[in-house]
Length: 129
Length: 129
DNA sequence: GATAAAGGTTCCACTCACTGGAAGGTCAAG
DNA sequence: CTTGACCTTCCAGTGAGTGGAACCTTTATC
Image (cartoon, rainbow over all chains, first blue to last red):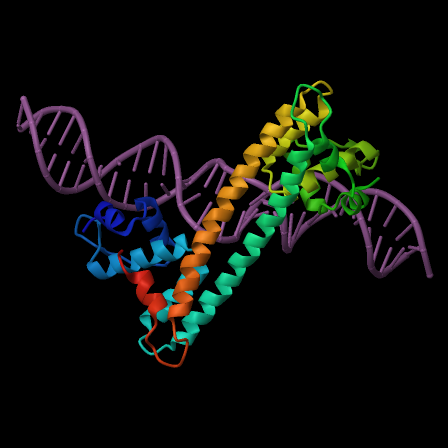
């Protein structure tokens, strides 16, 4: 299976697959013509990466998860720990964004948004606080 | 005023201030010894940038906002438009993160998290869906 | 058999918004 | 006069890819 087919099946761009090979996240056999040759196990791995990245796991997280994934004997608590750590990072990001959202929303509400030059948004941004 | 003092007053690291000068976001006069010399107006501008960046505005947004800020005659509606566009980007990010959060939270709940190797988190990540 | 399109390869540069570090110049205090 | 804090520039690296150039291989069509 060539890289294009692997991309179609895993949902990752070909560029990204090559990049993952570059940084040692995956490996692929080669055909005699130099083309990468993927087997079903590779597709599973790539799909795993695609979904984990979509869930916001960093590449380093993915590296750890892959190691756990390939270790038949690892305890599920190890995986759960990584996932929970990641969840708390997500929660933090959400909280930050909602803070931002509230501040920005207040600023927008306070601005007339008409033809006059007077704008509380800019005024507030410039205030030293 | 040297860059260290400007950093203290604006809340930006010195490195960041130099970077902002590099990319043409701000300019600073120079003393005879080559040191950057900041005046109060510069501090206002840097504070503006610091707060706008903290609200998640991109550098390009900041460029636009600064232009509007320095234009005495701009309509407040122009500023409000940029702010509203940014608000919708924030809303989108929050929605994405909450999607992620829900999926990840489900996965975590489904995992026993004990010494056994069986882990639904890894299983689900590998599923081709 | 020629050719064109589609796919593959490597390598280099760019993104965004900084951040770290090296090598060196300047200044105020003791 | 030295120490240490502060300043300067320049180069390299971050994370996670993305875009493009130059070139090679395969497949389909004429």
